[in-house]
Structures are given as structure tokens and as C-alpha cells.
Length: 376
Ligand code: IMP
Ligand code: MG
Image (cartoon, rainbow, N blue to C red; front, side, top):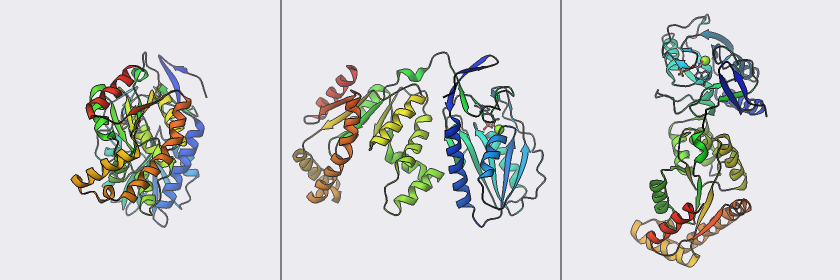
């Protein structure tokens, strides 16, 4: 990968490689080609920043479509003035057309919101935004761009069309502003595992409270993306609705977006993730981007016999039928074993696995977890 570099008074470090950009641009083009097949489409790219992205993306667009380049002004140096006065350069008629706005980056979202408002007055059939980069933490508007390449932390970036005082646009990869000290370095990142009935949910809450961690459960991340109808959410749903497992690649990207939303977090507790070695490796790479890593995998260990009786008791209270049927319980425990064993070995190989005796009172188990973490 490229080295750190200086632009004017600032240092930047490599953040997204040219290859990663290329792969992502292709995947965005595929999504657009599929979504807009048979529709009357027009692309509108926002200059200057989006010129490189628009060029690479448009090469892979298979739709018979025009592209128009417009200009707005909202940024100087590193601070948004938050103003967009007018659109210059829109010469094509967009009435009744499906407009796809191409942006390099959506930060506060103010620019894109104003552009959309101005374009709506021309009565297009629809407007969606396709942005290479998105900063969820800086975003202030309601409507999240439908097509997002990378969700990134709220740090200034340059390269691939993006500038710092008009410099850096020519770089083929994306760089991130380097800060004096990196607060993410001291993060506490925990992978919490435990079979159904081990008391994972209760213990996760206590760990979050004590260590100020952000909770990342794959289930919640799926629901968030599906609810907000993001590209990844739609993709995930297309598998789930057929009863298929969501592929690792999709799950990892969603999780990445979530992690990047909390660049200043004290750490994360990963719940129900990673489920495969590929996911564990992807998680390592993702945390490395934040100068961080997984500290420990904590696995609550409870024998099957005990789990079965706990689940049956829980069924009596909750009425959950899947907890009551011994055959279903046995199957869930088996699935858990098949899934976790390889992941456990992954962390054992890194000397990061700690098994916790999950028998005993809730408080006792919490104490064991706390002392395991404090001894790290
Ligand atoms: P927004 O209105 O805050 O969403 O800002 C959009 C514009 O701000 C982009 O089109 C960029 O020109 C500029 N911008 C926002 N963040 C960055 C960054 O990290 N690097 C370079 N330009 C940025
Ligand atoms: Mg721009």
C-alpha cells in the first residue's frame, strides 16, 4: 500500500486502496444497471469532486443514458459553509426522467439535499443518490443515500477526486487525515459468544454498562439496513426472503458501516458475529483500519443438559415454542457448535480465547467476565 504523505500543512495516511475502490465502483454499477433496467435514466455528476468516480462508474453503466455535469459550491478548505447557492451547468431536460446523482462524498448531506430540492422543481420521475463515500456521523439529513460505496468515519479524506484546498484530487487511492493521537487505539473490542440459553444478552448489557462499549449485534444491523432500505439491506433481504443465509460479504459490509459510525467509541462488543473464519479475518482487517484489533473472545460455556433445561424453563415463561421442543433445541445447540468451533480456534490461534464457566448465578458470571477483561 502507498505511504503516508503531506499536502500543505496536513499529513494523510492511506485509507482505501485503488483496488478496493475499483471493486466497489463495479458493484455500484451492477446495482444501478439492475435497478434501472428499462427506465429512462439520466446521470448527474456533481463537480469537481465526483469527476473521477463519475468517469469510472459511467464506464460500467450499461443503460442507454446521458450524463450531465453540474457545479455547486459549498466547501472551502476543510469546513463546510453549509450554503449551496445554485446549480450551474444543467442543460439537459430531466422532466419525467429517473435522475441518479453521482457524488464523491456525502458529509453533512446539506449539499445533496439542496441539489435534490432544486432538481425536484424540474419534475423528474425520481431522484436517487449514488455516493462513493458516506460519513454517517456527520450526516444531518433524513434521507440516507440509496447507493453507498463506503461508509467512513467522520474524518477528512482526500484523493480520487477529493481535495484539500484543491490538491490531492489526482491520487488514485483515498487518504485519511492523520491526527496527532488516535483515540481508537485503546479500544476494548470483545467478541461475545455463547449458546442459546447461556445468558449472553444479560451479560452483554452488563459489559456495555461497565466498559462503555457500543453493542453490535448482526440482527440489529440487518434490521436497521432493511428498515432504511439501503442497497445492502435490499441485498440482504433478497437472500432472507428466499430462506437463504446472507453471504459473508454482505454481512461484513453492513457491519463495517456500523463500526465506522462510531470512530470515537471506547470499543465494541460483537454479538452473534463473527460466525465464520472469513468473517473473523474481515473483522481484523476492519479494526486495523481504525488502528485497533479484537482484544478477546469471551465464550460462555454451559453444558447441553443445563441449556436444555434452561430453555424449557424459558419457554414456560415466554411461550416461545422454539424453546419448548427438545428436537429444535438439540438442533440449535448443534448448529451453534458447528458454527463456533472454527471461530473459537481462530481466536485460540491468536491467544485471544477465554472460556467462561456459564454455570452459577448471573452475578457470579458477571464477576468472572469482569475479571477476565480486567486481566487483559
Ligand atoms: P456536505 O454538504 O456536508 O454533504 O458536503 C459535501 C461536499 O463537501 C463534498 O462534495 C465535498 O466537496 C466536501 N467534503 C466533505 N467531506 C470531505 C472530505 O472529507 N474531503 C474532501 N471534501 C469533503
Ligand atoms: Mg463534491
